[in-house]
Length: 396
Image (tube, rainbow, N blue to C red; front, side, top):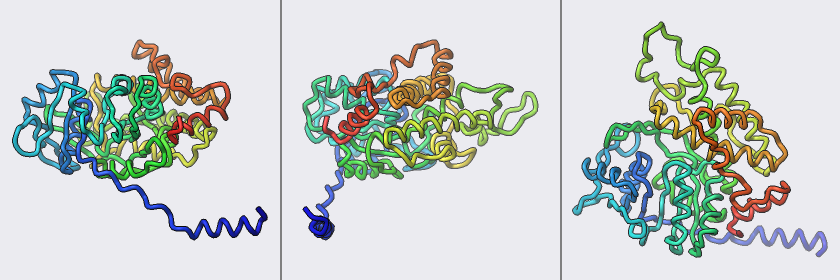
């Protein structure tokens, strides 16, 4: 084909009407896996939008607490009110301790909870998912959808399903028994696997306002800044790395409205976070992912505002340890693994991983998401990029 013929061909193709975009899925029947605060929030958001909602939990105490309270009450930002659960009449969240029953007929399945629980769900769900269902990880953290796709495949899943990865909920949560106090969070990156199913992300926006669609789960995974913000904020402190709030006299307590996650982060923390952010951007660029947030944007997205309606609450000790564990397994270790393949050192991220493991007393790095444990070869960067792209497209 000559140059002139090629130009004529490209002009003709440009004039052709684009194929119609897939219809945005309605997601009329939703199942939420997990009865913790994140699961209860998701179930309430879906019920508020008129969907038929089932909440599954393998823990009797979780279901008993929801039944006893009669549902979940939302206060603050978002759709406020009490969202009934376990009732026979009127709109209500159905409660179930039977996974196969909870999944039957669902259009959309949300997977919540810690990273290790998400991995367990992916293995268990392999034989239970049906054609046309969408499995959404919230939050997906780094490589979440890629790992879930791998476990579904090795678990024998033959159903034609779509995976979605969302990096954060639209609200921060402060739990007070059956009541969830919400403050608004920043918009979260989201992508679908295979990558040509942008309609799925548009459908999720019905329940999760403010989603930012990105091209693929590889891009949304590298856009995860949770670990680089949460680990330093929760592990570093004291005179050498003081918190970011105002200095208080001995014995004084900060005002409740100033006792926020962002106040945990001082200038020393910011320096560590900035260094980890630079490492993440360098590694991502080696995999062809550019345009990631700057350090300030990651802080706004994952630490919240210093005060006010976008402030993130300070977690209690139990939840703080869980967040650090998830940061290592689902955010820091995947970045270190990718850095090894890319030949781009990430010493600060690696050091933060070691510190977290020492504090928690667990060898979490070996349990973390790594490219070589989710079917992506680690011998050559180009091969790893091709494998990651193929999985993201749904070709593998």
